[in-house]
Length: 214
Ligand code: AMP
Image (tube, rainbow, N blue to C red; front, top):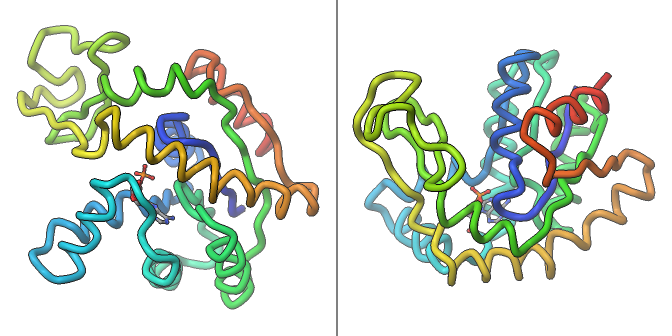
């Protein structure tokens, strides 16, 4: 099973993908995570990617599609894949079709997480993660039980994404509206899109997503 989680930044794609990884043994392919790895390198590509991400703009279609193709090549054909944050443009959606066909894979579902944009700014600007295990927290909605100590691994270092500031978030949302939302009709024409209420409590969103996958 191959699925796409679609929705603006902060809609909960990463959280829901993680849960499917745990419950179904699927693999999460997040182009955002791959690009965060790329930007760590002190190379011309790393620096270019960092600049584009910090501005909240989109990295080139060729770069992200090549990353996805490379990752898929390393997976067993029967492994289910969750595309998180990809495709983000019509060109990427078309590339994904070609990539999947080349590997004998089919797209089963596109799940759109439907959210209220104003609430997203608060969600995103308050979020942070444990630097050791990656568990997510939020300044207002989910603090660790003991201040400064990760509930999951006991780590004491936390980090925030450099692009989770209000100005960049607004640009990322504008990019979503202009370039990503328009790919929905492309998949709607195939009858594989389901809209899920992304403003519901996280567990309810998971239940709805699981129901779609059957
Ligand atoms: P995300 O973690 O999905 O919110 O992505 C963080 C940033 O990485 C985005 O704001 C873009 O700059 C870049 N990015 C991630 N995925 C893509 C993609 N599919 N196409 C272009 N840029 C991407």
